Length: 359
Image (cartoon, rainbow, N blue to C red; front, side, top):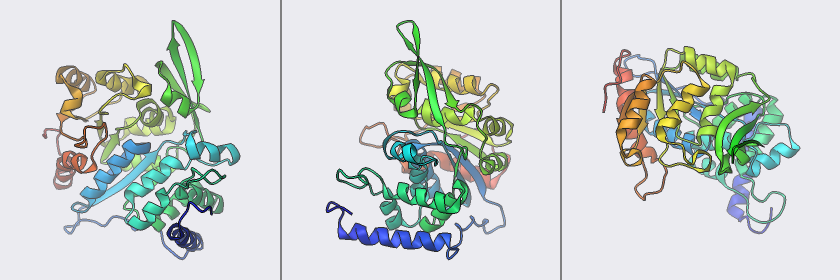
């Protein structure tokens, strides 16, 4: 390694690679399942869809709740990232982009030191510069295991994760978007290009179209008590799950309750898109979608009436709660998000007939 990586990191990488080898060799079991409550009730099964920092905030919130209530957590992650380290790795290897998967694993990890190492990004200007350690480990595990789900389960065992991380598809995907540009329609290709566009997005799609859904993600969706969507980049992290036919069908047919967490501010890809339009976009890409709860921060919403009407159009109740970090930046605070989610989880555990009448 270069001189910019300290000896502590060198030792940490050696330990991480040694543990990875032990996992692949069968020396360490997969992550332990969430145990039942003391009275025999099964855990509340929660599936969170997304990618990047938004999904990470949701998973960290659920992990905090897991300390007091038995939760079976599954993260279903987008696999179309083509920017940064993931994009560089995809250029030379036919693998799922590891970046969003790595972030989800780190958010669920009990092994704090190992998670920090997973997130360490190499400095310098050589070939390894800019790559997080975890991305490289996931690449190695995917090659050794021959299956991305097995590799993710092995990584979860290494990190002692309190949940499972799954890709929405075993197939590496790309995102395309049609943009409005002065009365003309322009198509941009690649998740990164879509995410940074300043033009209005008319429609997004996956390539190849209609990819096969990850079977384990479909099963988790079918068995869930709650399905959580957002926060996160709407067109590149949230909506892509609705574009995988098998997963979309499972979401629509699942008996689970559905919760949508709205973003705190617009980003490049949603500039000019109102919060009601965020909700309308979900129904546009998944006709017939029904939602039970829309969670939003009161300060971000402003006048709640338009958002309330949009939530009602999906069959949902609007719940306002302070879920932003206190420094004023548009980021969700996992502690505050956990406090907003706790009544749902608690009531679901106490009574499987819980309603959405909560505040």
